[in-house]
Length: 457
Image (cartoon, rainbow, N blue to C red; front, side, top):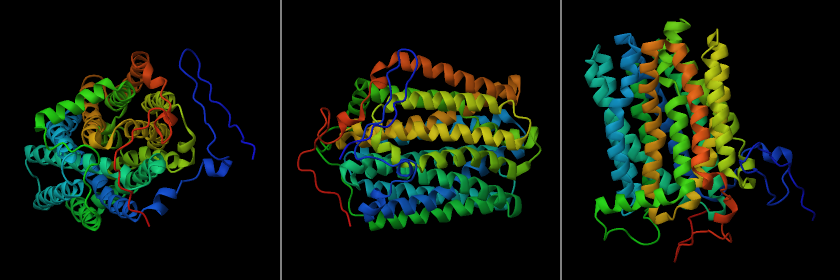
């Protein structure tokens, strides 16, 4: 059979060329449709995805409800943005410790602990909302603890997923997972907006508490998820964390991908301004705030669910860089939008670009990391992914208080574009990254001695 060559993607300047190589020949339809092979290959993967989808809807409800509650009670974009600072400390601590524990203990048990904590915290927020007018400081404290518990859950889940499917399906499994997660980021904010407008904030927090039980069910149904490879029990926690950080620092494609994500989320994501845009600029209320949150995820899900391309992409770093450039430009354009629907459309374009970059970034991270280090790598990755938007909340809130909401959105998008260019120059190893080198049979493939076969059905 003669292989068909797909068109090359040419990039101007000194940035390397991204190209799609042929595994088998790929039809245009297959290129743009979800790859269901991971879903079919593993019942454990299906369980965890299902539980995560339900839980994520509740998580998204809180991401809308908590900043909306703070803004409505204070009418301050600065205080709303400051929620990110309150969340940052617990998130850093939980991520680093969680990564070390995930590389020495059963990751399934750690996930259960995190879900019970999330359930309790969401219940506390619901009770306070039903009682009415809680002190603002309690919202900041509970928001910080929620961020910490969520970080622990993210770390353990990220370390688990690559071991639930055959090695050759890891990229597809991560892409499919990301695409479905984006769907929840559409449903969750829209549902939260409707629930808040009709039933109140307490009901939105209750939805989150109940949704945690889905992951509890999935985790109980999984077999033990101990890390593969050399056990880490002989290392102290501090040394274990240090070892993970050294590995990340020395792996330039990994470090570069983290730097690009941090740049994109810190400057480009204006989510703390969505309530201010919806209420103060467009007069759209809670439903408008939910629409803006959901618009980013809508665009992201459309692109992320078209996962047929991921197994045919080599130059993931190049595609990552260009996707973030598109993200930043679309965010900047949204700052000039004259209506909430135009702003939502531009945020959707930004979300689509971000999803392409996110799939590439996650694939790079998992391909270059041995399983014995995946917990610690995932802890830093989770820290970057979750702290970036929190830092962005603070940055956008401060700029909005000084120069206005629109100016904050525009300047953040442009700063994101400039930052990506600097990171691309600083990390040429990321621009040269070739995914095929890290797959079975590749020159840099990471083999684990006595690897057990994944549980499949």
